[in-house]
Image 1: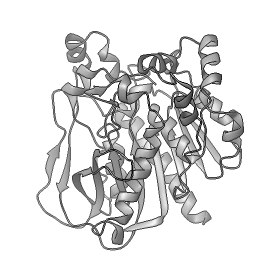
Image 2 (image 1 turned 135 degrees about the vertical axis):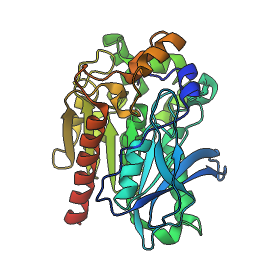
Image 3 (image 1 turned 135 degrees about the horizontal axis):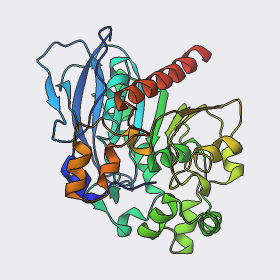
Image 4 (image 1 turned 120 degrees about the vertical axis):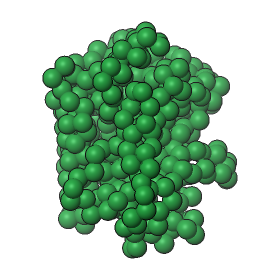
Length: 351
């Protein structure tokens, strides 16, 4: 659950998307969106990527001195038919732009992809006052699903029986919550005494999570969204707070992708590996991505970007560092995209 610093994310405020393949069946439509608060849910800001056959002039999105941008077609017409829906959850201190590279690849493959900012744990908005209510993160995603599937403009184009959630870092925790995993803060407190080096423990302390019995009860609630057909975790953190019983009871397919490079703050053995230890073996797929570091699932950086980040905020250069100097982040992105599309295809063939 490594945090992106507020300064860095405010400066970057952009994302990179995977380079379209020459044989891609669709161009990518794109629109930013704001979902109003309703029924106790909070307002959400985000974006939607979707397949289109329009040939309007594309415009760059997210180009800046650090991250490469990508050409998309803002407000293009969505491709006819009903498309599977993918909803995405960002990490601690991140934002909806962070997995835009993946969203674009999925849109090229025919998926509608929606991502939102989680108030209180997003860039320029990390506060204990709001962010401590981690149980609101999965509720944000459920609110997003409801809003899109009930929206007169989007619902005719969505296959409401085919919804997948993807999350990175704390977003991976959010995705597993939606799959049925449940949090036990007493267990997590004990685990943090045993493993105080974990980034998840730092994040819980910074956000002052679980300060009262009432908050701990809300964190322990079952927030499974039965509309979600599958879940995908990208190098998640905070997994060790899940009860083994709730992980064993998950009844949808889950793809777990871990960063292969050693990271004492988010060790794959203790975080992603914890899921594998307790989840049903017939429903979980695990992939250790060689050469990937925790931030490899963020946008592709430009040359010298790490130096620029270090000059701005010492330590932030890690955002642009992968497992080793020989690793190419664009290759890691393509490997991740292939794993995810293969996983999603296997769900289609199994149904």
